[in-house]
Length: 203
Image (cartoon, rainbow, N blue to C red; front, side, top):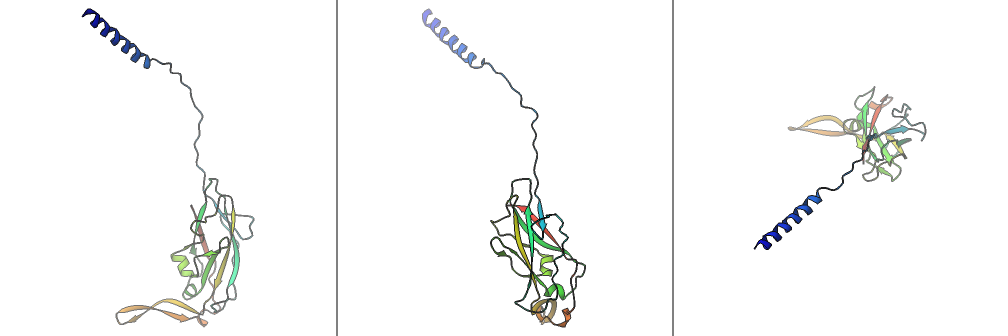
């Protein structure tokens, strides 16, 4: 019986020594210091000639001597550069922010279109009023401007023969919007110092 008890004690001591050894390993340490974390930025620049990019392009897009027509429009170029320090692609949204001259019917009749020449994408023709109140994407979904690349856009303007007026007419108990011909009411008129904002968002 003593031998059995002695054997059990020896086994218990062996287990205790083994368990204790598992928590008695060497444990050296090292230090990592001077670590810096920083973020980049998103930068969208604009130009008219694929050079001299800036975030505030003051070159005037001048559409002159326009006349009522559904097929004739004037075209000019606009270039955008994704100059972000972060490796991100940018989708671009464009909105008319302000104008010195802002009267009906010019803003309801004049239409503006932007075409991404990379894949011939456009959101279509929209009146200046719509560009001002809504704004539209000018890059195709899934084809944002890649980091550190430039892209050419064509900007078009036209004066259709018929436009939708913002004036409402009562028909019974309802207000009904109407279409009107573009006639002498817009002759020799202008919308000046028009400012658009371009907003790039991470793809």
